[in-house]
Length: 182
Image (tube, rainbow, N blue to C red):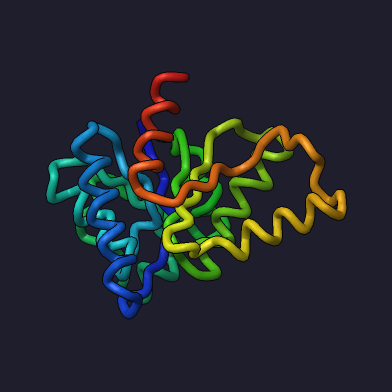
């Protein structure tokens, strides 16, 4: 299975968040899956991809021209798709991946996450998205979704919606259940 991971590219975040990348990357490789990610260096992005490679796994990077020009192209990718823009990167990653996992991140992570959710909502895909609410990181996002639902901006029964989990173990179990269903 090709698992897209969206996450922070910042190095100066708490180690407990960075270590999520090590563990998830090791699990992806140990279970014979392929990582699809933004192909850049830094933070959780590097930690996930380095862990996949160090455990013998495959890494597909989808890298915008600006990232390459900034000298942030990761060296550990087994395959690279060079794209013109961040918008094209989102589209290509959505096309390649079988499912999506969101670790903690910032605006870029939220942009990628919302892109997957919005495109799934209108039926462009039916690929699962798992959001790791580690240490309550995405509580605000959950509250906003509830607020939208309370005001009927979201339907009571959503046809496509993200799965929020609180631990890596729940991410692994969710990924295993996706494999069983496919």
